[in-house]
Length: 483
Picture 1 (spheres, one colour):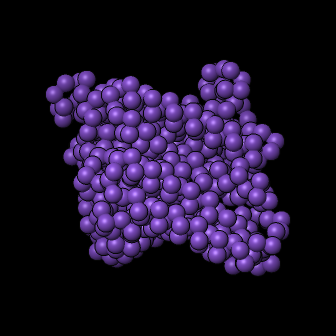
Picture 2 (cartoon, helix red, strand yellow):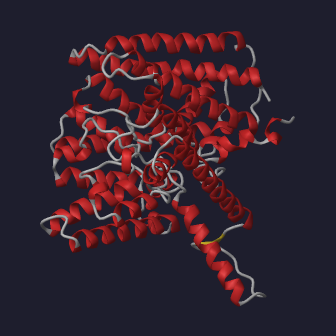
Picture 3 (cartoon, rainbow, N blue to C red):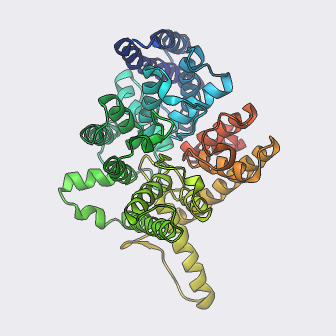
């Protein structure tokens, strides 16, 4: 294990992250909201911390192994979450405790979207912008950005990319060089963000709200500049725009690249994961619409369809935006939608959850086992589209599912131990492990009222979810630390 090289890289990454404190300082200056000083101090502190970590290890440059990549990724997310909380701790409004500041920072960076804040619209604009920016940076994965930058600093990125990029098949690269891959991902990500911001602005948002909500929409984060979330605007057009960009952001980004390069929309419809994703979304929208119409929650079918489509897509893609208090809907729907967040977005997207392709493979494997019970001697292969899937991949998906379930159970039991009730503990675990955001019970509105120890446990859940369990879990195996 190249410990000194790892520490050197970590210092570089923290120093680079300090740049993210500059835009909120400019926002504070532009709006004269008095919140610029915490960001200037945070910039200096991050820069100093990064330099102090990097300088003693600056001469240690070694080839990274896969194990080194896993360790860097985990340390990176923990370190960035910690330094990302500094502005929240230094700010006078909001005045947050250490646990709450860490919770808010990790929730933003992991694109979870759970918040401890209330009266959000009355906070300084710089704080509001910073929360949204955290989600935007975390959405694609800051590691992917670092992969494009670090080669210029003498640090290769392949091991980092393999450790952090979501999906069951991580070695498929869109372009031969990993830095080019990261750059292409960011071009698509940036283009979606700009298009989303412009659409929000044309639909009636201010430029500030449009940019902030574009950040959290494309990142599938869920933070808003208002307590009422997207519901503040009371605009079906804005709701529809949000739904469209959530769906686009929940699709596999390499698939976007393939469609753009091939100049053909048919590329999407040849992808089995994309077709399964669309089927799940339309099924959820239909069920929500039918139940809301049947129970007369809304006065007319147009309102019912508007809220059904928005909430179904928002929760199932793990964004967590709201147009209405979905916790007040017939209990069947909130529970259904929270369970749908376990599926999440496609692999290689900014969504959380298990990922659609894994759920499809689990379903196909279950079907194969049923067929084997009927025809024990028959040979069945699992296919995604026309391609046969190797048994090694299916086994890995089952292992991932088992690890995900185990982590979920452990975190939920720990939350119950802190005094949370059943519904709150279950939905809070789902909200943070799936990087979803909203829950039910005590965490239906926000997470501010739960004990600090519960917040620390949920921070761990967010990191597990963002790093897709295995990347973090592998550090707890004795074999990882043996040479």
